[in-house]
Length: 286
Length: 286
DNA sequence: TGAGAAATATCGATTAAATCGATCGATTTT
DNA sequence: AAAATCGATCGATTTAATCGATATTTCTCA
Image (tube, rainbow over all chains, first blue to last red; front, side):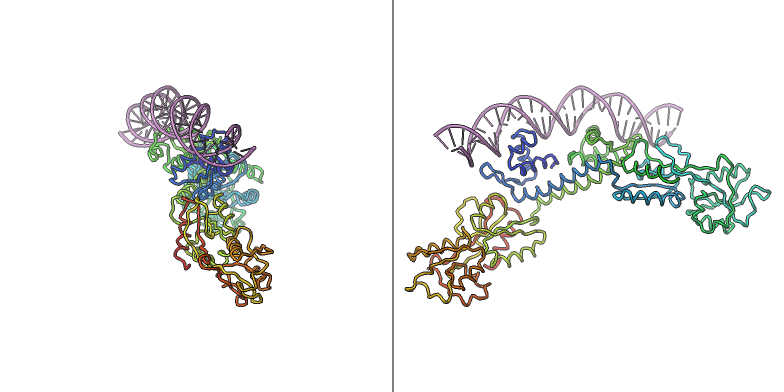
């Protein structure tokens, strides 16, 4: 049973005969007759009862007509959805934890207000995980920090972060004689901030003695407050941390003190929905 | 876009590749590849993004997948509904007014309790109208009085009525010297009771002076009570008429005092639903 | 790093399916 | 009674799908 069979069948019912249906479909009468007969053979059910030269639907035919209308309507809707320039469906976004927490709430709220037809889904992870997820097709777009090695993505700039080293007030200022904190708190493996922090230690010709991985920026900051060690976080994260005033901030040296976050998606693979997200991000406040 | 296209497309997604899908479908790999390519051409949308030797769905492909699942499920449901022996769908019944009012409530209640999947529709009319409606396919089955001239119907006996002539108590008994009432009240044209009444007048070598057509048995009985004239109704109709005690009943002569009501449907055109109605009627109290 | 395996794309040949064109028989209309 | 209309049938033709073989790319493992 194919959609074209149902279109022919529906035409015969609507036009009230094989000949009229054939005209309407731009076919010859015998073609329509044979398709109806074949459809009846395949379904093992007569769809019409031939009364003289009239074709009257059987109960089975009426049942099939109902389904035909629904199937053809659904098929039309599918084609319309594919050709539509209107964002719709599910948009699966990946994001680094810090971006998701601080930068995304505003633009995503705007997005879902402007495109109520779109269902948003969000998952967090580090850039490596997110890039893999994109290539596997598990997500449609992702917010990741530069540098993004792959040539398999298209991108636009989304946000600019200023990473700072955060220590407790109790700890003496960094860079004097006191050296660096012996313990560093880092986000889970693969986080770009972590690499930046390791680079910085290397520049100081120092190495952290101990590394603690944490799954939450706010927990990290809490630990820094408790003098457990140093962390490197985007300045913007501090804006949502109520105890930020009790932290000592050390900027990174010029040149490595800016970290761009990109919105990336698979190269050449866009959609009205992804384009809409790009727009909202590009026009939003950075 | 055909259902077979969607089946191939879905198989490629589910099996995770063209080759596996081809095995699964019992086709050769190149056949699957070319159908996917052709589907993409027709939709003017890439459905997969070729990442090396992996096929990853594009957003458009994911949209189409959603619709494919729904379309294929609906198509399966349609085939199941056609092959099913379970009554379902709409059952459109035609009936004479008197039968609908008196005889049908009980069996239809039983029917709709036993087959909750079936939506009942009812229209009333005289046997000629109902037979036409059946042949046009506007209804599926009808309750009509004998005789049913057409050879184009199958039938079973449904009910047996005892038509009686009804007059007002105020009117003297029929058959004496007083003659027959001058006015007759009849149901709308085509009603079999009407013919019976006219035959009876002919037997009495009499003719009614005036004929009034009415669209309701209960209104007719009300008019008889008011001494407007005589009517012929099935005895069973009187059972639902609260003033029946104040009416005078005159039985018809033996031989024409019984009138069978048949359940008819188009010859050879049955369905599980019609069969179920036949069962309920055949097993019900007559 | 290089060879082999595995997957998709391509293309001409073959097979299957749909459609056409003409005709018949039956029914309805004039 | 004649003409027109409609659906069924059947062989011929056209169109579409599939096959089979091969090329190309990518991934894997030594």
